[in-house]
Image 1 (cartoon, rainbow, N blue to C red):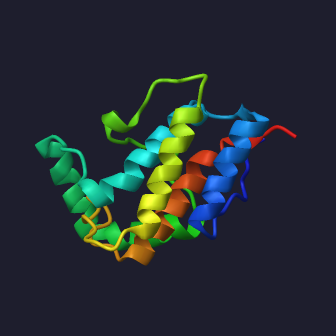
Image 2 (image 1 turned 90 degrees about the vertical axis):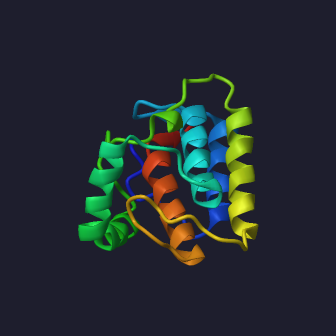
Image 3 (image 1 turned 180 degrees about the horizontal axis):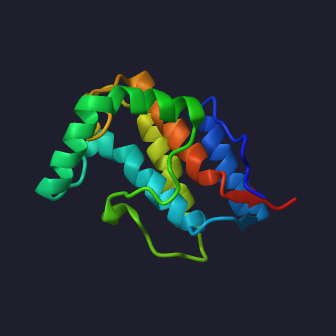
Length: 156
């Protein structure tokens, strides 16, 4: 069962959710396991702090057009719905191999969450959404986490 109503109000709720999934186990209803999801989310949580990965020129051009025409509207839609299109393209370096031991990946995401919470410096503009305030970035990260983690249902 996909957790259709999964929404996070704080970054700490994400930590609690992934730790519960790791502790109790889960049923996967998508293509990625907990390790893959945590690695992917940690990547995208730290890109705005460290810089986004390079993209081919044609991808940069296409995303630039989308950002100019619909970037802020797409941001608002994604944050409001907590969903993006399934199988939407992503940076290939943020797609990881499965790992039965999710502990290192869970810890990496927990560290990324703590880093984002304490971050006081500049934020790199999103390739798709443009410049974001820290509050907007946190809202985006909570939506991104909800989007992916809804495919893992905790065992009772």
